[in-house]
Image (tube, rainbow, N blue to C red; front, top):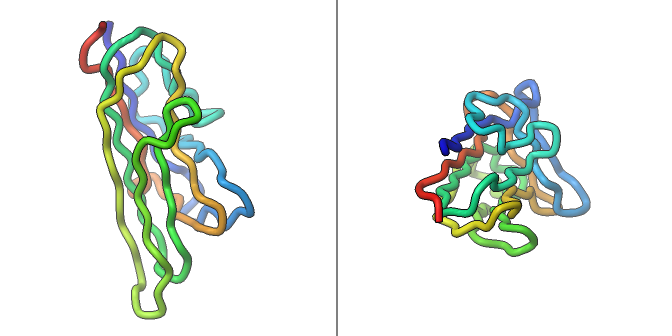
Length: 135
């Protein structure tokens, strides 16, 4: 089975956040969604088969606010990317990646941490994943 998706955070070139609580990011601009495992209405990837998957996320943000993104498997934080606000740092870029062993139905998603932001642009803030091998 082939499972591959790649999507961008579409927000018309505006900042997304600052929210009072951690919020699941919804990447609405879908470039690829083979296997239809990524849901652009919820921002959640649902494993269609058990296997090893590879996920990446990248972000761009202004330097005037914190940026805190975390990749979750179900309710478990796996990896994150963070940057603190700065008066002399105009922009921030970051990201992370992980190989995950998923069971059928496991969920993977990216959250934006409370009191932080990212830039919503079709080119800069992305979430991608693919099935490496079935188990």
